[in-house]
Amino acid sequence: MKKIKLIENKTINFNNLQKLYKVSLKKNHHANFGPISQLLEKYVHKKLKLPKNKIVITCSSSTSAILIIAKYLKSKKKKKFATSNFTFFSNFIDELKESLILPTNLNCSIDLKILQKNINRFDNLIYTNCFNYNYDYSTIYQFCKKNKKTLIVDNATGFYERPKNYK
Image (cartoon, helix red, strand yellow):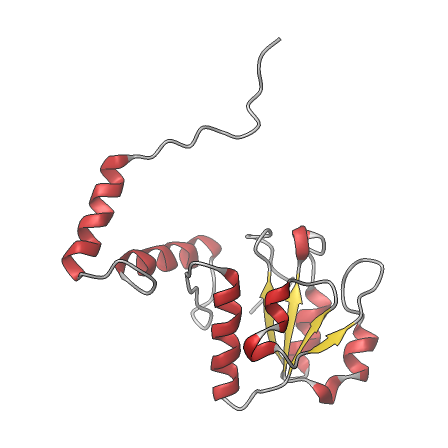
């Protein structure tokens, strides 16, 4: 019987690593927002075929990303956040500690009726797609677009999923 590897062998290409490191050395910038991060952001933006009004920001953790987004939105006077009770701890700490926690339905998603009922209680909705359970969140996207709510999708395990008619 042929042995099947559970985790593929991921060897490092040290030549590529050395080329990338030279770029960081030249700019003397080795961390977030440096030249390597910018190359990765451009690559992912192109790969995902995102429109020009959408951006990719790389960082070392999704918790940092969510909190940076929250801080930015608060600076733009969009201060009230809502998230579901099917989420990660990072959506209810620091800048988000006063988030409105909405119940989820049997599909681990937020019901539109619940969103409509609470429409004046939030400016920004953090939609968590835990374990890629709800890959089609078109109705949530359309609701937020129609009601001028910022939609933040916490979708770490569902890289290529997008709502239908995404613009």
